[in-house]
Image 1: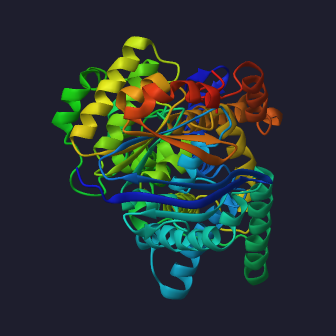
Image 2: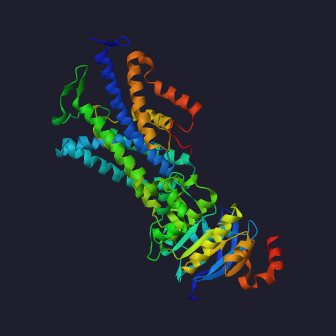
Image 3: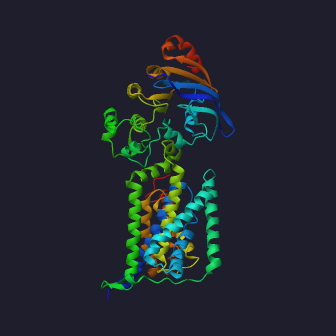
Length: 295
Length: 235
């Protein structure tokens, strides 16, 4: 049996894979957060709650309606996106004329309310969600076992990130979105309905978060607090990757997921801190982020 | 050239917070004309264009475009009605390529210039197609900013100081281009500090001061009125 830096190879690769899986979640969440920040100028503190809602919608679909995982992957993001659209239309858009801090406070309050309501119904207990039959089991790669479900999470997350990247960077709708991020009034003067684009952006970000939530349900148990752990880390990653850059968020997510995973092996006490240490380092040397465009 | 009034501004007022920037502006632009707003810095020329476009936080009065009252309209509704804006800073988007910048404003009505015509008028837009918009020189960015609104089918173009900061050779090219688009039936409301340039393209000039129109001079009368104009502009 090989060892790598004194650690059994199987453990090393297993932890690396876990890091990549975490990174895949970070990527989905940081992508939604970065896109919302770009368009709305608001750091969406409700993002973790929307992620949690995605997992809960999947749970409720299964428990109450016997609707399984694969449908949940489609339905939960749509439901949560609609809910996000409602929040934007009734509340969040009133913050745009104000200092950005107010948007932050509002989304923070919304997160607390969402969590509070879910907690009222479900308490703090972790609820189980079964890995779908098609993805049970693992592949023996020789140097490690790779659970099918975790491989699926990475593939699904990266595919969605790639599709989102393509929509934003390579389509004319994406061009309008990028332009509105720079100068919304001018884009609006061209006849583009910018308020509607903003609404759809927020809903899209919410949908991405919810999709991550459904992917997460079989991996981390479905519970009210599941968003909180992720979100602080995701904020740090968005800072590191650069607020304006989609590719930056995704790449930073994967790398930092792996760094975090490996740190757990070699220096477990630091694993919770390592991403923030990187963040401080990046802020000191390249404040716009590694791939940031410096707005 | 039809002589219908395309744009009629009456008692237009506008505010930036407490600052009463436009204090009752009255003028009109007829179809197919090129009209300029002249005046010193701070007279309210750019603010007038922004008010027409609905980009001011607060405005009052009347902005009638082709007979339709637009004072309450949103900027996107005004854009869809057929008015297009080219701001003073040109508004070229940094995260878009030259082609993406060019194609960004949607076609809102028939009658805009097609791409072949645009590339014939502005050949370097084709050469620099995949460069980032802001990698172009000032003059090229100005051409791009005008080219993209020629495509949309908008009939009234609001140009805010198109020659500002540009070399004399480029200024001449822009003048040529504006005369060309007039031949093609566009109507232009132009804000300019450089009245000598304005004289090479415009049919009529309005002079603004302290948020009001204080005089109107036909281009043919300009040589006779030069001294008066110098007085207004403090030249």
